[in-house]
Length: 224
Ligand SMILES: O=P(O)(O)OC[C@H]1O[C@H](OP(=O)(O)OP(=O)(O)O)[C@H](O)[C@@H]1O
Ligand SMILES: O=c1cc[nH]c(=O)[nH]1
Ligand SMILES: [Mg+2]
Image 1 (cartoon, helix red, strand yellow):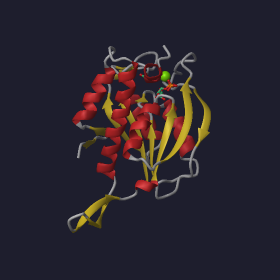
Image 2 (image 1 turned 90 degrees about the vertical axis):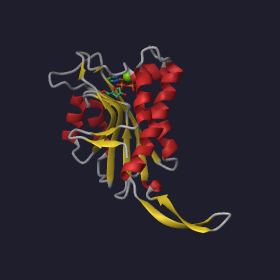
Image 3 (image 1 turned 180 degrees about the horizontal axis):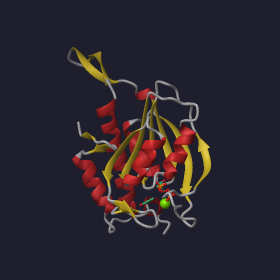
Image 4 (image 1 turned 120 degrees about the vertical axis):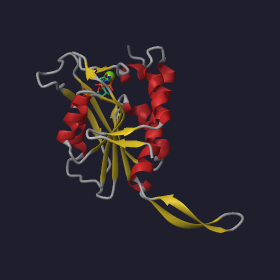
């Protein structure tokens, strides 16, 4: 298994995840390759979640040659993926390759970058649109956002996701996290398992992750 258990988070340490993240960090990686990289990273992370957190059961199967025993992943129908618009869209596309039958929720959340961070290092978050499926106690919920910086967005998103819900598993999945964001989300939602490919060094004065990969939404959607 290529998930490392740390105090602050679980790290996806699969070599292909690191390889893909390095590619999309590169400032020379243009929009299409960047977006494809996020899709690939989502798929790898999805496989890692299955490998690390989901059980299998034995099933009898008949091949064209003989009867035998196979294994099947349990609970694939009980997965809910929350897409935090907009940067998570390609990341979620990749996750859906691992969880094709997942129910999906969408939350549009944006940082007010003009207002900037307050003295506690939080951004005001605007939530424009929320559409969530029912979350049941047997569900595995994956809240996906490639960037976890101050954690302000994720805390606002989790307020909606966890309103009246107590799922069996709750993963906050990101590609790149800052220590501040992990701390903030870990304190706000101790029931969540924080899963990330990389924990970076720090945030700059504008709340961007360093070294990070820049603005994931702008790079994927070519808006700047
Ligand atoms: O941890 P935080 O400090 O809240 O920052 C992380 C958020 O910032 C980015 O979204 P952004 O607000 O840029 O919206 P976008 O996806 O539309 O670009 C990113 O996708 C996260 O949602
Ligand atoms: O570094 C960062 C921080 C927030 N959002 C991004 O897309 N990148
Ligand atoms: Mg953005």
